[in-house]
Length: 346
Image 1 (cartoon, rainbow, N blue to C red):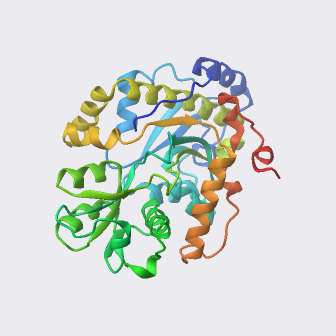
Image 2 (cartoon, helix red, strand yellow):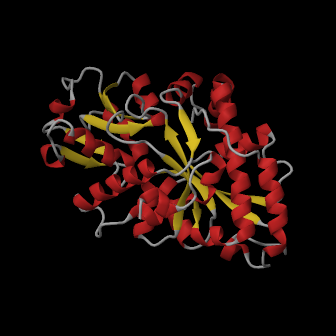
């Protein structure tokens, strides 16, 4: 992510708060609360994707040094669904995901809550999502998608993007031929002519663009494009583990700030770990600046809209009140209200 984070309270202060809270931690299994080894907290941090990017960049920048707790990294190759499943059985404490997994974590009773937002700066103009078509396609606009085979992975931000984009021109999913396809398989299907259009994002967008595909629409003006640092409710209820999560937020903010200030070094680092061309990484990372910030009423409203859409198309069996998906206790790091009722007006 190419981000320009809001300034947060120095992590040294969070570490000091953690030191005060450590005596309150109970000695219990890390499988239950993230606390282990007596008073020493073990924070299980999830990373989505095949490559341990965050773990490696933490080490590269020294963000894993002088920790007043221990980090146990958990890699989730199958991304959001695997992370949600692990949270549901108490196997991970905190991680970064897109907004969509929180909706399905709530539906599954996994006990995950968003505590920090990583949001696109000016989502009316910028986005990391796109609907793309082959270079020689006759499709020039969203209206031209009528009757087309459009690929996206169901239950993801890509499906939501397609629905909202079609809605903007008076179309629905009934007007296209939806093709449910894992995100990683999208570029191959598009290149092979198996689909007419593809909803994609980030590095996958950059990959197909490098193969000649062109975007007929981005997510700008259609979807918020938020990501979250989310944590297990049980981990947040343990004072020492919650303090460790607060400290981790500060370290994530430092990482994001370094990325924003060193885009070429970041791209080279990412490319070295993944084997992707540097220019593809830069294209994928430079679409939209992002900001690390607090839970807001606007963030909650955007999440509610997305959840409602999944209910209306039958992906969710029950309508949700998404306020349960948020815990704004760390909003004070950004000078924002920490009371959920104050944010929602309840």
